Image (cartoon, rainbow, N blue to C red; front, side, top):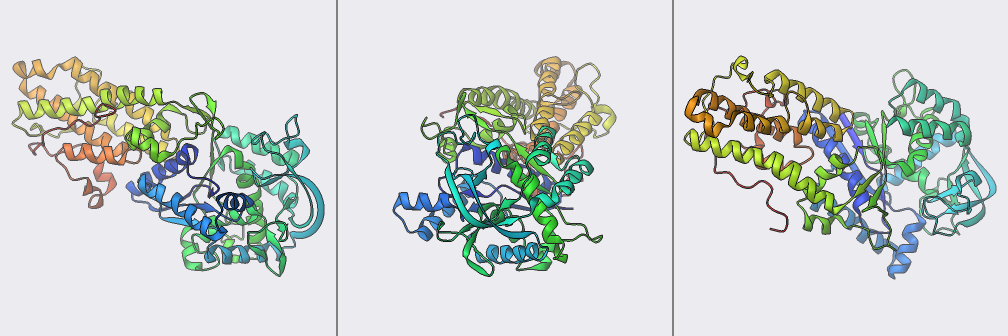
Length: 533
């Protein structure tokens, strides 16, 4: 199967922070989950550089705009690399391939008769890079998302896109494809917006008033407005305007990940734009002539930082590279999606990271692996206990632990949660699920007491310890998308090579019995050292 996932492209007026890291890590987890399952996967991230924000930031830095953009784009790309994010491409909207895609797309929309020129006066929020109607302002006539920024009253002649002509089509899309927008509460929000406020969009600015951006085809006096340009990055990165065959391979996107503050652009404007362009571009049409729209858009919530809104003035903006010096980054990845239901607002709290690290990771996962490996080495000559892999004997009827079928059920749940972008629920099932989970595996140790059982029933002790070791192996692959380094460490401590993933089908990888009885067990190492050590 093909799986194409994107993050939003990020403004380069500042460095990455914990909010953008959250979105990017979510995309990385889902991309890794699909790669692990054998899907042909493409993961895109990048930077949005054709905005007035970039110009203002470059002026403040005292640098030439091109120099500034190159430096900042490199910071973003290198940050993700240093954090181990497995993106396949990094798109910049100043690249020629993007300009070619925008040119082709604009001309297709123009041919549909959906672009016109008009003069208007409206408030503009530089923070959102968006014109605001009166209904979108708060009671103080300010942008709710940027209440400390003054709005600019802009009067100029621009090009407009006839978004309102697609209002009924967009509502029909929402009706026919209930999963197009997730979570469901975002669908309700955007449906209300389209019904009550989906008007024509300004899609250009006068060149004399902005000093960046892509020229409007055939009219150098206008620059294409940031959203009409930026959204097309999802196509330009996979060959639209430059490589038709590449585009056919990857488009449409399977999932766009975005923050809830930009859903009106992604969930309403973007499909309307594609509907218009598809009328005159066969590359954007399905076999039946319908437009090739993204399959799903998932909008996550906002962060507070230890209960406060994230802002420079409060000094609580967190640099992910600095954070990774305080905690193992795999632990941060885990915290993101164990602590906060994906799609909901959440709070980033260092005290809670430390609690999760000690309780969930060190005590529950790390301690289980350490005890299982140590006892197996001690009682069975440094090897995985010799047991029959007949699934019938893996039912430990006198304990709360399930059987092999319970582990298979857990795998089914985890697979489905990754498929539907519910990373939080996948982790909840692995740690606290019924039948087979980390909590129950630890309980099995307490119930059977292998350190006593070995004197009375060595055969059953072997079964208990093999069950624990083999479950740890399964858990390692279940959590690999979320904690790739920890997953590899677990596999190594079980005497296997993590690169087995490249030689083994996923269906075989998750079959019970992948840990060979009688194989050597290396001396264990602490999986989660005390913080600060």
